[in-house]
Length: 211
Ligand code: ATP
Figure (cartoon, rainbow, N blue to C red):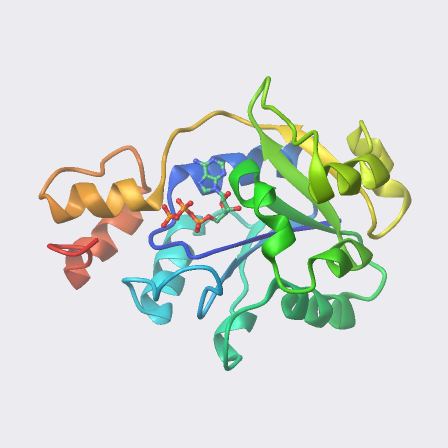
């Protein structure tokens, strides 16, 4: 099975990397694809260019062979829709199990995603939660949960797509927004991002005076 973590990664930080590693270990994934989006559908343009965000990701995962930076969204015009990315991965990988990793914050907004109801036909959804996290109990999302949820990682192995798992991960209160703010204010982002990412940010003069 392959994990997919999409995001803006502006910049990539330990909140992305450690939680992805947690899921990789628990689900015994063969690899995790980190897929930076070109034009995020739900927010403004990233501060760093696509090339800079890829370079930061490559630097962050250097030496971790299970983590692969996948640039397929950068070649597409228009907004980066996850459904298109999954369709293209499915075409390439055939019947391989695919697990889309998403944070609980992103999952709460799932029903606003383009063609959201079709995502589960192409992959499993693995929602990265914190111990004791409240799971939506009402509305469209609650119905979706009731229909698709499984309780153990083993159940994902039985088919290539179609199941929803809530997976507790290491709690790390880190966000790219907070890192950009710190850097813009001339404060340190040490121990929030890998050292190699820090070096690139300094070399390119990224995020200074901009958030
Ligand atoms: P920003 O602050 O710019 O919105 P971000 O730090 O939330 O960025 P994204 O690139 O937007 O990072 O996130 C990509 C994915 O990683 C999303 O599914 C998000 O929920 C998840 N994620 C981000 N930070 C964490 C974290 N600290 N712990 C767990 N998941 C995270």
